[in-house]
Image (cartoon, rainbow, N blue to C red; front, side, top):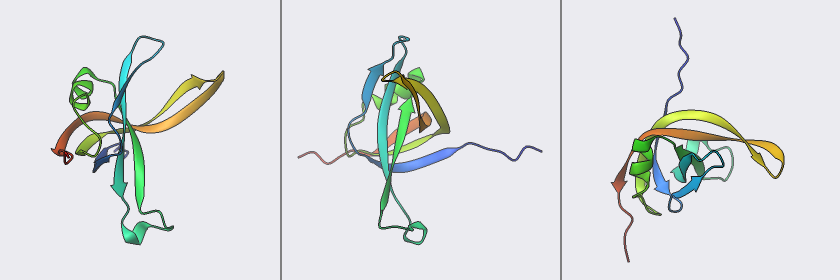
Length: 111
């Protein structure tokens, strides 16, 4: 029996509007950051929130994210992935949530 799983479920606030990037390969990806509070009992430092990097690669996910704005409260589901890329001649990596589905729970207050 395989007990391993890779499932992420986030509900939090967008720290800024999502950005579309076109990679050298021609692929398009939307990236965004979801800010989620830490539970007090889990915080070992003074840090009260975590900013989680997310990426929307699929057509459906990119379409959803393209209409989101800074400070929207969103729900994101997906998988945690490590992505490798070249930056300044060196290989770098980042861990991010690859979004499979998402929705706006509450729009940012306009004003």
